[in-house]
Structure formats: C-alpha cells, structure tokens
Amino acid sequence: AETHLKRALDIDHEYVLAMAALGYVYRRMGDRMTEGLERDQMYNKGELHLLEALKRSPKVVDDDGESWRGSRRTRRRRWWTR
Image (cartoon, rainbow, N blue to C red):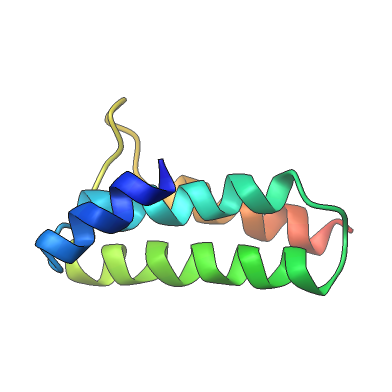
C-alpha cells in the first residue's frame, strides 16, 4: 500500500485521500513495531501525513465515511496510556 500511495502523491501532490491513507499506513506499521524510537518516528511520520491531509481538507473522510481525525485520536490516546 505504501508504494502505491507514494506513487499517487508523486502524480498529484494535492491528493488528500492518498495523503491521509499513507498516514494511516505508517501508523499501522508503527503498531507492528516494538516499542522504541523507530516506532515513535513511524507514528510521527504517520501523524504528519494525517495532519497535512486534514489541513488541506478538514472534512476528509476514509472509505467508510469516517473522519481521519478519529485515527489521530486513537494514536494519541495510545501514546498517553503507555
């Protein structure tokens, strides 16, 4: 998924759905990593993509019609509960 989403963004830098989806992919990649700096960096990378997508289109939603903001809240809640 990462490869295809990055390719989509190479073609269209303003494609907020790809930007948000790539942020989610990075978050999920972080979920599979062991705790530590690399995991935190992956989470941060994902959050940057999600924030940029939301900045460009505050009402951007996923395929299920859910706001990408929920994905950010889940990650932040997980961060604070460690």
